[in-house]
Structures are given as structure tokens and as C-alpha cells.
Length: 109
Length: 114
Image (cartoon, rainbow over all chains, first blue to last red; front, side):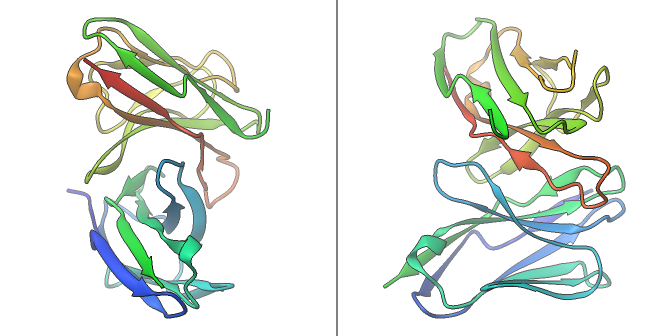
């Protein structure tokens, strides 16, 4: 079957660094997405990885290891506005996204 | 219009009633999707359409139907609503010409079936 696993909730301090992990099992693989979703709002795109390695975009970076079925999202210099849920999604052989349940990130002052 | 719009924003519906959720995009994306999001379960695909005139079933299609008469609109119909269909519904679209196939989401419809 197809499955995405990520932690349910994480807590971090303003100004710190946090890493949100995601493991996936899909029928075929065409890339790994990270989305951010603030409470009561729609998901918005953060990053996409299809090749192994690290993609950096400002304070956010995303890493992929295809051989391990593993990705992480790294958030640096945390700000209070980063409090949100972070959704991991893998694209399968039919180019459909398989979604994790999301990781709720709580930022404390 | 800029992006994707959904209507209504929220709705309370009696069980057994018929309901259509509307979705319109102005980005000329060829693919559109309907998801439901329930606490602890993440987004689950209900139906999708890769191009106007075609539709396909997702992970949880039972009790729902869709149509794609043109590129911009992708309505979702609940023929006879049941309480288990209480959820937040998101419409999304993407451009199949791009390898990345990034999906853009509408603001969502919060549906309560009593």
C-alpha cells in the first residue's frame, strides 16, 4: 500500500532550527512536496524534490533520499508566523499526490 | 478572479439533501482535484480531472460525483449527504505541462451534515 509518515506535532523556540521528517512508500515515485497550512487556511506550496539532495530556499530547506524513502523539511531562524501544519506529499506513478496527515509545528517565544 | 475560488465558504446541510460545491480557476490549468481534509487523516483525494471532459476516481469517491464541462469549472456534488461527509473540502488545480505538477489550492468549503 501507499503510506506517508510524519510526526503529529513538534514544538520549537523562536529563533531556533527545527527539522520535520517524512518517510514515504508509494507505487512509483515522481517527487516529494512540502506544503505549509495555517489553521483555517488552504495549503500553500513550499518545496519540491525529485533528485537526492538538499534544496535551499531562504530560511526553508528540503532534503530527499530516494533510496531510503525519506525527506525532511528544515526551518531556520524560526518566527512566530511559522506556527502552522507542514504537509508532506509524495507523487506516485500516476502523478497523484499521496498526503501525510501533517505535522503541527508550535513555536514558543 | 485570481487563482481558485470555492463556494460556499461554509454550509450546514440536513442529511439526505443534495449539495453542489463549486470550484472555479482562472489559471487555465488542465488538471483539477477535489480533496477532503479530516482531523488526523490529512488530505484525501475524492475525484480528479486531468483535462476538460475527463474525470477519474480518487481514494474516497463513494457518495460524490463530479463533472468537467470546461477548463475552468469543476463542481463536486453530494447526491444525498450523510453525516460522515462532514469535512473541509479543498479544490486544487495544476498544470500538467510542468513536470513538477505543483497543485494550487482554493480556500476551502467547510461542510457540516446533520
